[in-house]
Image (cartoon, rainbow, N blue to C red; front, side, top):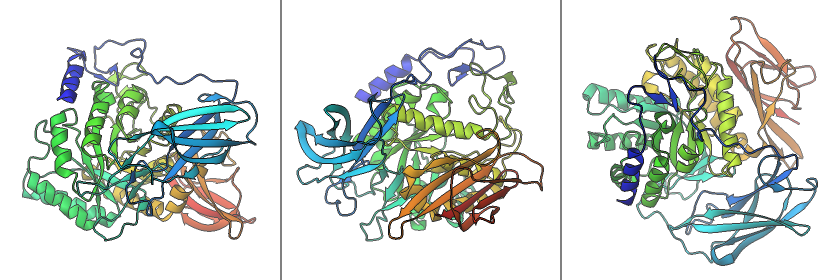
Amino acid sequence: MYYSLLLTAAFSTVARAATFGQWCGKYYQVGAPMPASRPEGSLFPYPSYSDTPLLDFQCVTASSLYLEGDDANDPPMILIDTNITHDVGQPWYGDKSGNLTVEVWVDDWQPITTGSIQVGSLGSLLPFSTANLTASTQAYNLTCKASINGREFWTNSTLRYLPPNPHGGNTVKIDRKSGSLVVRNETGGSDARERIIPFGFYDNYQGSSGTQMYNDTLNRLYAAKQYGFNFIHPVAPNSNSTPWPDWEGFLHYLDVAEQLGIWIMYDMRYTWTNTSSVTEQVTALRNRSNILLWYTGDEPDGAMDPLISTGIAYDVINTLDGYRPVSLVLNCENYYFIQYGLDGSDLLLVDPYPIALNGAWSKRYNTPVNVNFGDSGCDNCNGTFYDITETMDSSIDRARTQGKYRTTPVWMVPQAFDDGQQEFWYRVPTGDEEAVQTVIAYNHGAMGHCAWNSEYSTPDILSNASFIAGQLYAQSRFIIDAHDSRQTVYSNLSYPGINGIDLASWTMYHPENNTHETLVMGSNFNYIASGTFTTFSLANVTGTVKEVLFGNVTQAEDGSALFSLPRTSVAGVILQH
């Protein structure tokens, strides 16, 4: 009741324009006002640059939660970052040569671990014991201190140590070292956990619209299995009171998904602001063994829902079921990112759709578009693939400045649908463009793929998505295990960062033979003439070609990788050194 009253009050205080609609805080229709600036307070509060280096000391649990009796399968660890920055942290005087003594306590100054951590390092792990902790649905306060040469640096977070899931359902964790999800086969008889790269699609659930449409929905579920997607996000019908009019049919759908080994990202987009409905749905489904994520707001920033609404929904879900992450998707380039996104989710999706788009003109509303006015279908986009890289980079960086780089992974929602040219876009994306979107998203830190929308997609898009999914799964040892090694790679071409070539690498060290392996994935998103190629080598990564995974990569005379990529194409190669 408390949450319901808060949310009702929040909605009652939101002023909606009586004549003209707004999206992302901007008017967008013919005849609407054209403000000279964005709404005050809506833009992200980036910290100012510091001439003095700063120590950004972060201390969180390596898993988003730990379970009583599960230490053998998920050994408890504290994850430490001691990054040197120029925007967040406390003043740091000196170089990166020293070691910090780190001490960690839980409530009432109960020590749980200590260790020595190098300054300027990422992803260091300190083991701790749960022997003196009592499992509880209430989180412990975590207090961490780093000290060196008489100086102290402090930070706080939380530790969630839960009893075994009392609802009989599955438990999903976020591996905070990599941003991957940690699952286990609840029906397979094993307690072993697996870190996965989630790769799937939204899909419209058609249940009460007739037998044929329901069968089509099930057929797309079977197709998802054939394509190799490991989860599906069924989109609920538009109903504010009853999310699934054919509840029995939907439960059968979930059963089929479980039989196929497909996880479910559970959608509450039309009911998430109704706390009674959220309570009813979560309570009814929390005993399932294939719910991967709860999903609340679908572009709440664009719709300008009450700023506290995502946080309220998050709290309600965590009270009812603290054993799975809560997610949502943001649409706006920069509109109350903290309040809508970071305050209301464990995992954040972003959905820039820049393909076949005129970022300066709204095809749908027949109006100009700029940073303060208009809706082009991709907020503040230019209509290039750089819109995706900039969205990924800014989302991850904003989380970092708020101390949530480890606790809020970011997923990509590729543009993978045919809207019949009824909306903002001038044509359907190609399968090659789906592959490019996905590769550059992972190059820039994405840890999940949930494309819109398989019912409206094409065989070309789905086939390319299937191919890239298989490549990502196969290289999970790099993308997950070597997550902190990800770096931007430059080619030998002129104008890096604006030449339409996007590259990144992940490196693994093999101490047994003192060698390294490096995965490099690249994209050419230039729309050059068919039959022509952009040829380049790598400027800041060394090694000889061990294996070409996909795309047009050959071995140069010195053994290095030589890329020769046609328009809108991708490539992947493993180097050894």
